[in-house]
Structure formats: C-alpha cells, structure tokens
Image (tube, rainbow, N blue to C red):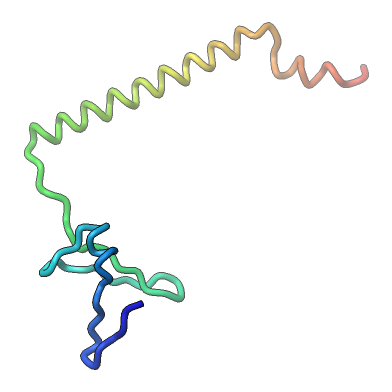
Length: 95
C-alpha cells in the first residue's frame, strides 16, 4: 500500500512499475473510475510510417477474411444436415 505525502505525491510500488514498464520520468494518466481512481501509463503509441501501417492493415484484412470463410463454412455445414430449423420445431407439435 502506498502513502500520500504532504505534497499529495504517491509512490508506485516497484513490482507494479516493473510489470507495466513504468520508469522515472514517465507520465501517468489519472482518471475517475466509479468510486475509485484508475491510473495507467500515459504513453502514446509510436508513430508508424505508411508502409508499416499498410502491412498491419493487410494482416488484419487477411485475418478477417479467414474468419469470414470459417463462418461461411459453418453455415454450409449447417445447411447440409438434412433438416431445417422449421422442420425441427414442427416435429414435436401435434397436427
């Protein structure tokens, strides 16, 4: 547990600073969180050049296309099962 000094300063426990890569001189983001206070490293993401951003975009697009293909495959398998959902619902009803 950390104590607040007379200047309203707080020391971050070493284990947490190491875990989250917080070093002397780093900025910390403080924000209200319900009935508590949340703090997080105030780092911004590094600027990426256009080539790197396009590579990341292409990789994300490939992942999305694979997910969509997997969904399409599951849909095809479901439609090849020999019965429809409506038939299943009607099966238990008296006519």
